[in-house]
Image (cartoon, rainbow, N blue to C red; front, side, top):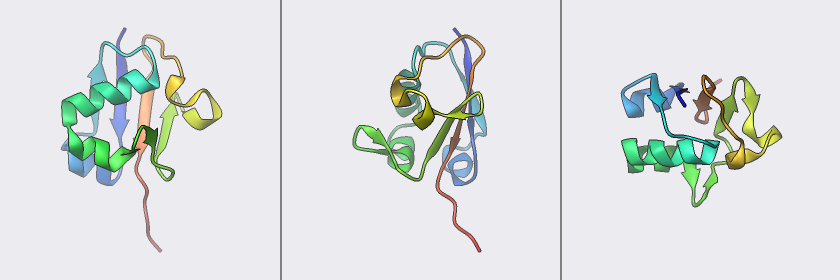
Length: 91
């Protein structure tokens, strides 16, 4: 199963890419673990707080917030797109 993960705002800069393809994720949690394995502490520190997604980080699957679905247990299908938005500030 292939899924696309897109990174936005400061997360793009931290990871040095705007997207990656993953081939082994059954759930959003699996994808997050694969991203931690790939990018290390930089990704973990930017997105996670313990075993939960930071409150201000938004993770969408095909445009729907995973918090409105099943959180990290949200199941993925071939061709799905995960979008990850770190907190942004401005004025």
